[in-house]
Image 1 (cartoon, helix red, strand yellow):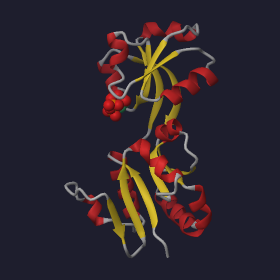
Image 2: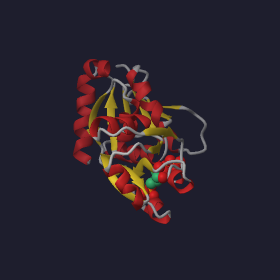
Image 3: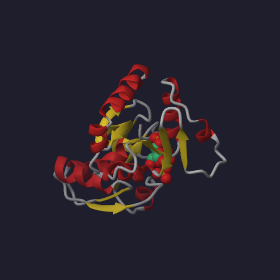
Length: 211
Ligand code: PRP
C-alpha cells in the first residue's frame, strides 16, 4: 500500500484537524511536539504521512500531487484557484469574507464609485467587485493588519476575514457587504481521487460521521 500524504495549513486549523482525525483513529503523536523542527510525520501502521505548510501553499502541494489531501480555509482555496477537488466542509474555522470600512464609505459602494480596496485576497476581491458587483475598483495588496488601511487613509474599504468582529469594532469599522461564508475544507488531488478512491471515500465517510 502506498502512503497517503496530507498537507495541513499551519496553526489553529491544523490543531483542530488533528483533533478530528484522532476521533476516527488517525493519530500522529510526533506531530504534537511543538518544539520539534521535523517537517514530515509518518503513521507507519496506517501508511499515512502528514506535513504542515503555510496555508496558501497547501493547494499548491495538492495540485501537484505532492500531497494527496489538504486541509485549508476556503478563503485560501478561492484565492489560490488551484486545480483541486473540494470534497468536505469540515465545519470549523467558520468566518466570513467581508467588505469593511467606516460607515461613511457605504454610499461609495452603493454608487459604484472608483475606490481603493486594500486586501490580502486580490483574486477574491477582483472576482467580487468585477464579476458580482460590476464595480471598477483599484485593488491594493497587503499582507496583514488590513484594518489599518482605511484608518490611515490608504483605501476607502478593505476585503478581509471577519470572525468575531472584534478587530473591526475596536477600530470603529463595520461590515458593509458580505462576500462569502468561509470554513475549513478538505481538498484532494484529482488523480489521487481516482487512484485512491476507496481509501479516500472511506476516510471521508468516517470523518462525516464525526462532524
Ligand atoms: C484576521 C483577519 C482580521 C481578524 C478578524 O487577521 O484578517 O484582521 O483576523 O478576526 P476577528 O473578527 O475575530 O477580530 P489575523 O489575526 O489572521 O492576522 P493578519 O491581520 O496578519 O491577517
